[in-house]
Amino acid sequence: MLKEKLETILNELDTWQFPAPAENMPHGDMPGDIVLISDALIPHAQTLFRLLVKMMKEKGDEKYVISIFGGSGSGKSVTTSLLTYYLNDAGIKTYAISGDNYPRRIPEYNDAERLSIFRSEGLKGLLKENLYSKENQAVLDDLWKKEIDSDPAQAEQYPWLAAYQKYGREALRGYLGEEKEQDYNQINWVLDSFKKGNEKIWLKRMGRTEDARWYDEIDFSDTDVLLLEWTHAGADQVKGVDIAICLRSTPEETKAYRLFRARDGKADSAFVTMVLEIEQEKLDRRMENADIILSKEGEVLRP
Image (cartoon, rainbow, N blue to C red; front, side, top):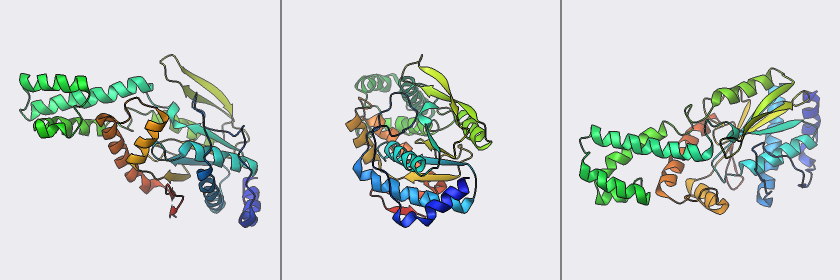
């Protein structure tokens, strides 16, 4: 029984021996993901392990959904791997899933949709403010080719561009991390199925091409904890989370991480900078939903 396991761990928590990282450590189920364990994050994961054991014992449930959210580069993947490893080693059967399997579009198409929303709504904004003209469209055509139409600095030369950027940004805010971009209903179905005790659940897999979509049936018959790792795991739309963990980071750290990973060839563009700023605004608000907040330096900011 999980309660007895937690009681045993709590009695030994001050002297608990964590296993050393191993090559076969578990990680999220996003196809193609490779997790490289950072020594700097090991003490962070150990801190979270201790907090989680105490919280789970206080709640007294038999199954737990735990979420870990934060920006890119906040350490979600590594921390999830370490936590899953530690919990399993302690006899608490844990399975980690990646929310990155649950967007409505593959990354290439989603990036295109984001840009399309920004530009189309920006143009509508110019019309609404009576600022649209053939001359301004010609300027936009040039800015689009250079991919700098979202750069605030350009509005200094073209004051009307501020309205275009304002309306485009507002529309983008209504898309990023919302229902039109992320399939919250499906992820909630998975969490609900787990909490109901369904022994087998079909989990979505999604690669980076349109034909890379499938489902794997996973056996959860003896699983105690389902760990959801996802940028949007702290959103209000995610239902059924028992303990939410936020790994706090800044847009600058996220951009540096993307450049390091070469995840996006345009990671330092004005548009990506805008996207990261909007995502950070939402992450800052979603921190209110967190039971545990851990800083980049490993400081416990909550509880």
